[in-house]
Image 1 (cartoon, rainbow, N blue to C red):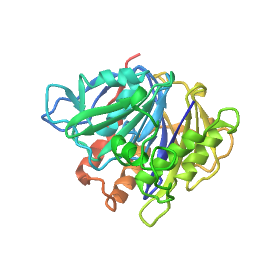
Image 2 (image 1 turned 90 degrees about the vertical axis):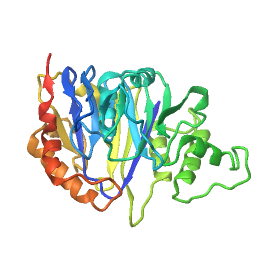
Image 3 (image 1 turned 90 degrees about the horizontal axis):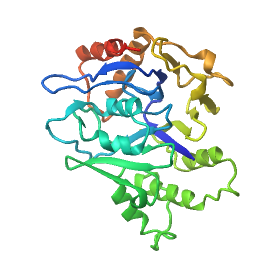
Image 4 (image 1 turned 180 degrees about the vertical axis):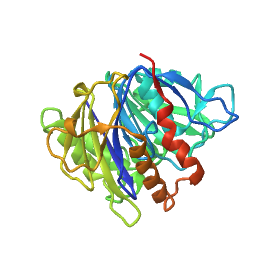
Length: 328
């Protein structure tokens, strides 16, 4: 059982970050909303472009994977009695605290997303094979799982719109031919086709098959390229990844990392050109490393659709990871 993710974006810089268990955190928010507070129960490996503690996706040591994609029509809930965190810190919260999709569902009772910078939806999977799409539409959380998740995939349209489009195509109840268009809905159809065609005893190594699917729906244009391709092996707790800058597939094993919080967190440039074992090439996290990442990313964000952040607030974001504390 594997989980594949393409990150299609205008630039591909980023860090792979080792996040520790037993760390006390308070969500980064502006007043007057009340931030979520928690202590991480699980260590995780995440892929970060914005800052440490604000991942784009990752896997924890219990085998929970959380990934996100852009969804323009996303509308997060309005103010209520729940405590608050941002959309990317929501990902870290789930990896810190949950071992199953059902636990992710349960968290909605006491946390909500606010002060967001981007409109996204989520694909979540746990080690038992439970998968869910989680979206926020018209100010409410909606999700698809179990029998309602006919195709275990997600692109940049809502899941229900994607399924309605899929049913128009040959092989899925319709007459429309499958297109090679880079549009989100057409990529969803091509993924569904490849998932349908997979035969466990005939399709070869499942990780290779997953990378083939990601290649089948990769994009290349003036505005966006597939800059990261990531495969999470949930059974063996391994990560395979490659980038547009470093095309050799690299492997990380969660068992190789020490997630105790009394040992410094470590990071690695996602575009590292190192081949073979990456373990010895991780370096200790520092505020200076985070500063370089944050300032580089937000300089590039000015050319994208992501909401801007005032320069005066960047130093708060840069230094925020230093506010978390190991308590055991």
